Image (cartoon, helix red, strand yellow):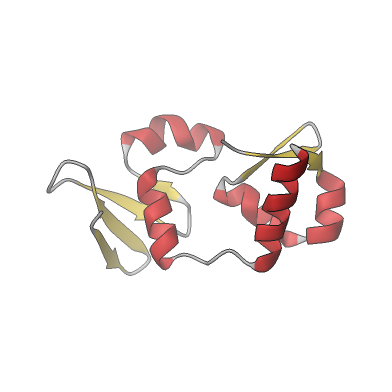
Length: 110
């Protein structure tokens, strides 16, 4: 996937050669239809946003990997307990679309 960086935004080539979507890594958005009509509604990421995040975004910290492993193992964990133990990492993973909070429980967003 071809990625062109320009300031704080990125142009990511579609599967159709010559067609590009704009990804804003700071806002966590993409102009592709999949993101606009599906993933934005559930706080998820499209393949273009994921590609930019993998290449230019923050790498996962040890704490975020540990929290993700813990949630995967348990299926869901209490949000307050996770916040006490992992702090801001919980919010970061929710913003990235890797975790979802539902009725006081954190779950892996699939």
